[in-house]
Image (tube, rainbow, N blue to C red; front, side, top):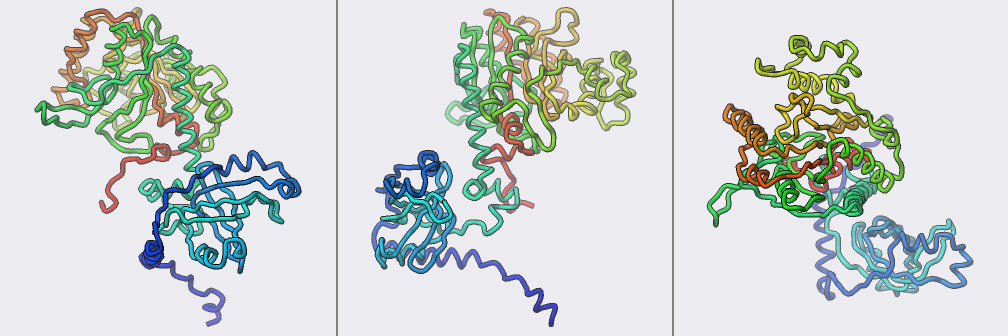
Length: 507
């Protein structure tokens, strides 16, 4: 008995269905009195603007010349104290407190206010003052209910605790979790900063098709659909690359597209079936120029979005201020795995033996470059926390990149890794139409052999190259992954407003 007294059973949470029913009853009573969702209240001030304009004003300053305020937002807090009450309204910029008095509103209006619920959308006007605790507050002369919230907000623990619930109910997550709102504000700033960077350098922003007759531009499995009127199969874009290079052939020598891509592949903390990239192409440049440009781009974006070049990320410190490392795959493997000798990593027998302990399929036809790639992915990729360019990718896995003149087994290509993830992929473009045709033919053979990610033969693109593509450099950068870095987010789902999920009732 005594134990029961000291540890009384926790009160069961209120039944959400009951709460919704009570709120629907309140809404019904509102409808009886007139429009329940009025649309004639004009907000004139945002919370952040009021704090910025009057945050330094003293109590006496405000009393001498009380500034007028007309605000609106969602009611997040309410404290009723007899004939006076406080409430906190949240708008897109932040929060502002309002002070409501019965003798100002009148007893009927004040009684109505007392029965409004957290989550309701409220408009208020009045004058600013400071409370005894020094909080900037609107002393209300008129207040209106603008939209009734029928469902209760999550209780007590500052938002949704379960991450999947947050993804499935992003609208609620944004209401109750300020860190989520800030992450998506930063993401928007990132996209804007990227756009400004390229426009300032004379690039033309373009839009290319999202439905392709032949999916190309990346090694990936596409989504397939069907156009009824044309009676033809189409594929959702896996990359805009081949269309952007067609534009370069056409004389648009500096182009970029902030593009949505779709790949019918796995879902993870790093992958979503639809994702956003920036792809850009510049004639008369090479991959080395792109690496320099990428360093400049990331530093400018970090300054604008994150406020500095040294970024915290999941317990690590990422330093964008230093020159990024530039290593071949073999150099990276040897640096981060000292048990492998750099000189030996050029020998296929050594590489096959090194791959033995890993569950990785190795084929008799795999050359040195492909074997290095497999060992790199197994042992090194995740260790590239600080910004690192990996250069000289094998030609047989780079079907759109220009082969290196000195060593045709590798290409003039790089991938940028930060936090152990690929952030960017760029190269000097393959502009030899006959070489491109041969590469496509090899990819088509691989597809016939069962490789679902191998590229199709795109005869139309080869014909475009036959008109002459100038020496060109092109690159794609994953915006979602950059947003993860700049917001210190562990999962790609944290920076995509509505990530793809299994149905809630799926097992």
